[in-house]
Structures are given as C-alpha cells and as structure tokens.
Length: 156
Image (tube, rainbow, N blue to C red):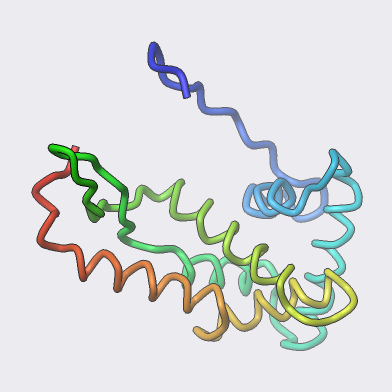
C-alpha cells in the first residue's frame, strides 16, 4: 500500500449475460490463473442450479445472500503505546460487499463435493436463507467487535 497517495478505484464492468456488477465482482473472487471464462462458466452454471432448486430469480437470491453476509462492523488491529488493540470499525458498503463475496467463495471452496458450481450454488442458497458458514463468519465478526467495544475510542 502506497504511503504517498491512495489507490484509484477501478471501474467495474458488468458481466455479459446478466449485466450485473455483482456477478463480475464474484467472477474476480473465483478467478484462478487468469482464467476468467472458466470462472464465468462456474458462476453461470451455479446460477442455473439455483434457478432449478428455488424456482426464483437467481440474481435476486445472490443479492439477498450478499446482503445477509455483509458485515456492519469489523475489528482492525491498532497499535497504541506498545500494545495492540482490536478496535471495532464500521464497514463501508463497498468493503462489506467485497468481504461477503470473499467469504461466500471461501466457504464454497471448503465445502465437500465434486463440482465447484454445485458447491457455490449451495453456499449462495444457504447464505440467502440466513444459515451456512458465511453467515457464521459474519456473526463471529460482529461478536468480536462487540467484545472489543471498550476500545472504540481508539478509532482513527
């Protein structure tokens, strides 16, 4: 991270089929070794699976899953006078969305199963129904922030 100036925010182009910026952000999270087309295939296949399982609009379910897993507060390590405190900080909308997508993909990869598209679809469905590992991670983050509320005055 540069000390001199802040990083420029890159413009996110929407994905070709659903023309959604959220799906293109998810594509970047799944992307490995620059194989964007493969990542998009996985996502589109998982959206088809979601459509078959729930008979609802898969894009709405994805948005609901992201909304459910987005944290409101997180803790950041702050060093004051030789000791490190976990200081609770509010999460901005863009960072919250990024964290939610990161957690959904992380826990989809950790799931048992053979196909990544099936695992991703199941994780998204679980997150939209307010259960699953990504939701547990959000709750854990909120608990950590609640426990360290005493250090909130160290915000920077």
